[in-house]
Amino acid sequence: MAGLSMFKQYTIDTTHRSLAPEIMDDFAMEGSLLQKALDRIAKINRLLGGNKITIQGVEALLQQLPADREVVIADIGCGNGDMLRTLAAYGRKKQCKFRLIGIDANNFTTLHAAQLSAKFPEISYRCLDVTHTSFADMKCDIVLCTLTLHHFKNEEIFQLMKIFRNSAAVGIVINDLHRNIIAYRLFQALCFVLGLNRMTKADGLTSILRGFKKKELRYFSQKLNLIHYSLRWKWAFRYQWVISNL
Image 1 (cartoon, rainbow, N blue to C red):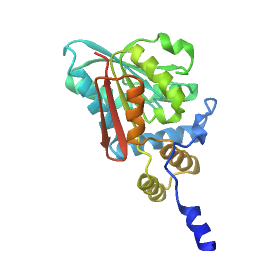
Image 2: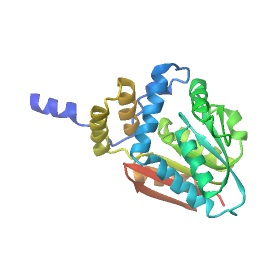
Image 3: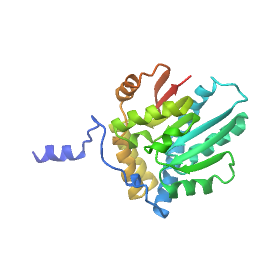
Image 4: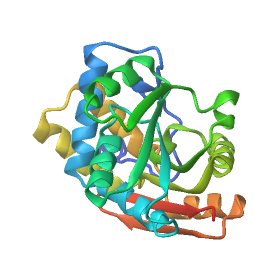
């Protein structure tokens, strides 16, 4: 019995999405600890190729537009703005006309992102809670959600996706976590190798348990009556969900 108890202690149940909160879900949080966590998360995302997944999704949607059209892109839960700076660099290289907007509910986060993005005038930031009614009036061409959707409960996701579809004239790019025991263990190993602080480690592991199975994203697609979309598994344990509204 003692052996069975110890086994259960080290097993992780990924059957259902976790409802456990993340430390960074506190929108009033600020200071150096949060800043370091935001920068570490961005670094890990780059290291694992996460930004590339979002860029590929944007490329797929841009194929439906004239090359000389200005494209307004809103990044929901933008963190320290790394995704937008990567997208701005991509736009400059490809001679795309981008107007990029970072949305985050934490004011400290948007101020930090703005400081890091000083050399990118095409990027602006807004402190805004996407669950607030004022967000529903925002209009853009493409909505991005990179490692953001998992922060919400299922019923909140349905409502948000409806708002995103109404806000985004061209489409939506979701890049989020695959809830998987291997992903969980690999992140534990990565925390050890990189010496991540307690908050980044705790939130990262919780994020994985709040991630998705493919069947869940398919269910969301069916319930939202989506017609033109693609859903692909990507390394490192991510799902790329690209929705066209055209």
